[in-house]
Amino acid sequence: MYDLLTRIKLLSLSISCYFLSFFSAASQEFVSTEFAAGNVKSITFEKEGLRPAYPFVQPWSGEEMILHFDVTGDSGGTLWYSLTHCDREWNKSDLFTSDYLEGFEENQITDYLPSFNTRVNYTHYTLRLPNSDARFLVSGNYVITVWDQGEPETPLLRRRFFVSDGSSSAQAVFRRPMKPGTTETHQQAEITVSTGSLVVTDPWRQITVTIMQNGRWDRSAINLTPDFAGNGRVEINALSDKTLMPGGNEFRYFDIKTIRQTRQNVRAIDFVNGIYQAFLLPSDDREFKPYFSNDDFNGKYVVAIEESSEPDREADYVMVYFTLPAFEELRGGSVYVSGDFTGWTYGPENRMTWSAARGCYELSLLLKQGWYNYEYAFVPSGKELPDGFHFEGSHWETGNDYLILTYFRDPTLRYDRLTGVTLANTRQ
Image (cartoon, rainbow, N blue to C red; front, top):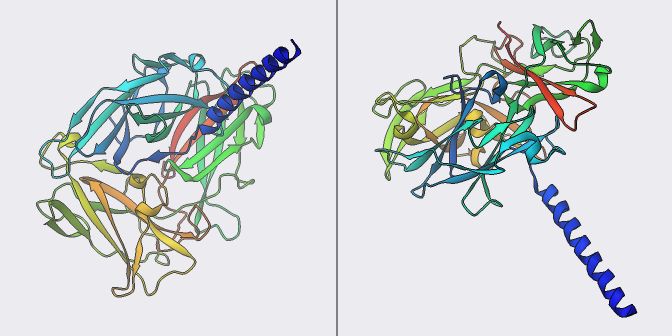
């Protein structure tokens, strides 16, 4: 009898340990970092007919946004996706799926079309959010994960986006920094948040602000706490340097909307081995040049084709060759081509190689026809983000977008509310 009881206890303990390890492993598996597989390209959001658009939506006022992306190759078909709610620091929140979504936990992407009359075959996917299968119940940070049927453990795409409930509003005034060493190269925002109907008892614990330059995570400041609170508002002023960021430069650009002739900053177009190839004009080093005003898309790109009104499925993919002349190879790091089309990431796909014979850095990327902004960045060895202003320079006058996100922690709830998203520009 004793042996039987002992065995039952050991079995119960084993089962408990199994489930604990299972749920622990499941919680550790969630990753919020943005990702795209090598065959997933041209990822953009659309909102109110504007594309590209920043990925935020206020669904309770009737807004919706559309995710667009391509999967290259011949095997297009139904894909699956899930939506995960996160806290203000992009950790998975404590909410159950039924707490933040009305609908199903996993859903299909059934809106897709194969490319038409292109040299590079691909399938274009479109997903509206919210939709009849997934409706948001609460505001906050969200992550969408997309995978091929039967392969949820191997994601094709992961993107962050924001759902706001519109309970607060923010304004930004941009100042020329006064901190020594940043006056000519950086920008700084003074932010005022009107708390509206929010019941704020401890603004320094309940309210935080995140600010992002041009929608890029490598130029962001998160969890900023107020410098002043009172009279229904909180403020982050210029004295604290919390919002101090490099201004950067106006972005470089090129036009490959047509492959019949060269457009802006394209030296030549050729057709080799069954694919169109575009050779850009060699880039110049702008690090020590004075600021020159130029209208741009703040690092974004627009998919377009001159010969058709349906670029989503009729624009072709072109191998684009970048050339950056340099006197010598930079030691202690790597040079990258960066922009919204690279996801503002710095990996092997967009790392340039040094050619001693030609005295330049080189890179080729497969890009869909359109109009592109880009820049060059130097990332020191052992670091993940660019350092300094190599090749580009940085100026306080540069025109940039800033996303201002206001988070509120209600002590009666188990999640961080996103109460407002404001888009501001340094020139407005």
